Amino acid sequence: MKLTMLKSKIHRVSVTHAELDYEGSCAIDQNLMDKANILPFEMLHIYNVANGERFTTYAITAPRDSGTIGVNGAAAHKASPGDLLIICTYAELQAAEAEHFNPALVYVDADNSITHTSHGHLAAA
Image (cartoon, rainbow, N blue to C red; front, top):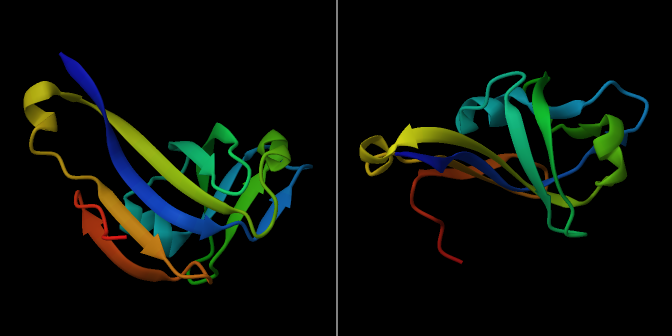
């Protein structure tokens, strides 16, 4: 049996810009992508804390150390600059694999700079 498991999460990043007239995707600072183990063109599930919107798109790389979180194309209707997002990826794993799998969890400050990371253990509230 295969299970769909959380692979990575970038928690509560701030949207820096939204561009409707763009071919699509979500631009993410290269540092965040590296720490969250997200590859260019990987499917993203995005949850907008500000308005409750949930949507899928794919990742593109933004310059390292830029703090960029850019929501592009049709998804720009679902997020505005300043909105807080939770960006997730998922992986299908065999049940035995899933028992020992730990997702990459990345937490940021108001400038989208990494404050800390975790591997499978949720941060205390």
